[in-house]
Image: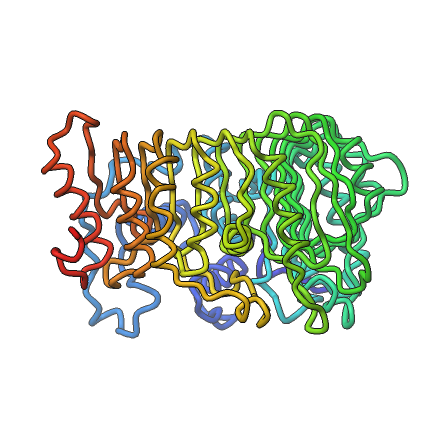
Length: 553
């Protein structure tokens, strides 16, 4: 019977080697009776030389060129060819690590280079099968994966990745592949399946249910799942697991409790678009990220309780539909991110009082964190507090990060946070624009309040002077040099710079992350005129269309 993978896994015949070599170069194989090129050690050296980029083999030209051999100029290397084969001098373990950076098909094809390379790929520490190969042919794709793992010779594998669009016919194959990974003591396992969003895709394809033999796996250190059903029937045993990421998957409170109790060394947990979890409790967890929860079939409000005494970083982000959080025991927490958006159905109305209560409860529990990041939606809920005369809970934070471009309705919320941060030393403003994070005020709210952002800033100037006694560093990121900047950002920075007492540094970073410009201030003994000139430069940098005399008013 003909080997279906013969073009990729050839027998060691000259004809087969020549055909695969032509395929690697992107050319059709030569006719069956065409004379064979040399295949001795000289050929292997030539291939290695091409990989090193030194020269083309004698009497041969670039295979992708349309010129004929007689007319094509010979390639002249920039550097002279080394005296010895540098690649072959590397140890096998390093060559196998290098092969991991190639697409799996290309890594397999290196078996043609020489005798030494024939089996190198069979002991690579990483096997990654992604959608780029055989994406339109499920049968051929499964055949390729099966043949690859059949020829794999190492007793252990560090990383094993499957990234396909899940198909019902893949169940049996997937179980074999996962079994292969577990029996080879896999350390990082990634099962990433596509098909749409969390609930929509299952109309045309069912999700993949993790096999029960996966739950007791002692070697597993890092597990990434997407669009999987996680439902252990017995006790989970992942004693080595440190990082767990579950995305667009079906969970229950019982399942996550089973996982957490069976993972005594778990340090990081990420849940992205996973509903059904009402409690997260762990003694070992240090980092928790919850990103978006959409549960369209949920009729009532749901609450997720978080109780992790050793938690150091908590992130609540993305769209939350009828899902709130209650922080219970997080005494070790030092970093918190609140960049979530509470969404509603069209038939529902925003309940400002409810949102205020939810956010206030979170801020009270997070009052001792050293670093707090707040997104636009939360800022604008705080704005409602401030306008109605309700202050934010006092905190001991030293660093405040604002993820907003600073629009008019952000200003009261920012003032509220600054007023509640008497120990603030560093302020970071991420200016990245995010249109879908605006708070959707209802019409009745607009009808009740006439609000002017600039006038509000002027009326709260005393707050800046009274509550910014410790602020030393100001950092702006996401700056676009070609744009003139928001008028509210410029006004805000004017009030800020005129109020701080112990300012040491102001830095502006571009969207690429590169430093655009920075200013150092030596402290209270600095020359007043020089300090004022530097502050004017900062304002002019943020808004090139504002005249210097207007800035210095």
